[in-house]
Length: 130
Image (cartoon, rainbow, N blue to C red; front, side):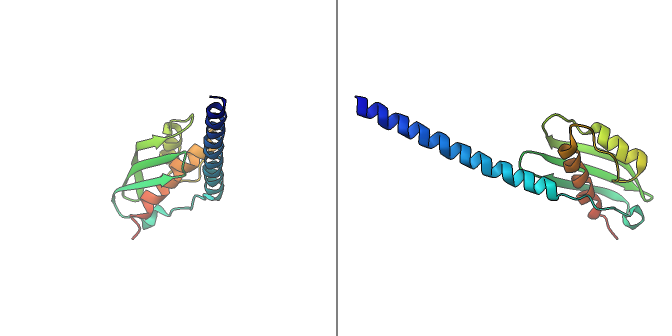
């Protein structure tokens, strides 16, 4: 009976250790990918009219957007999907619409989520390049 308890305890410790190790690996991948995420400047003069979808995933965060362009202006951005931590994305979208640029300030406390949304918008816009 005691031998079974020792084996069971050992097995539980092993499983927990494997889980922690795998979680740590994915957390490191997330941190590396989000740190290397850069938002490129987009010249709206080079984007043809249309609606474009963009998706960006950094393990713990992702964003899918639909961006509509008319007459070299972003007229709407719909946040279709957003897996996030504490941030909804709407303030960032309004900044992009107001400034007609991806060069906007991140929301304090939600920098990584903002980068994810901006990268999705960039990917969408890049699909409309002439």
